[in-house]
Image (tube, rainbow, N blue to C red; front, top):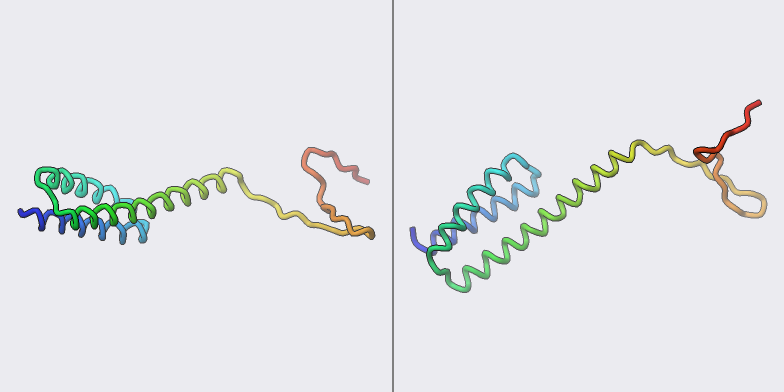
Length: 113
């Protein structure tokens, strides 16, 4: 395999990785990561033209941004799920214009008739 076809293979893998990230296909990402690792190992044997190397770096950085955004979204979702359901607060305004909640504050006993 020539250096050009090796870099083309990696470029194709990076394009496929981008599409997989956008589709959130996590099972396929694992397979792609293994294929990408093998392809990059083959690339290390030969030297690439600077143009090809620049393209590979740009595509890798683009995918890294997507992956980082996905990881942050997953963490944010996890944190929201761990917080549990939130009840909306109902607000009222006094005659002086001050806002106050109509629901009792958690941890404060409410007097019942």
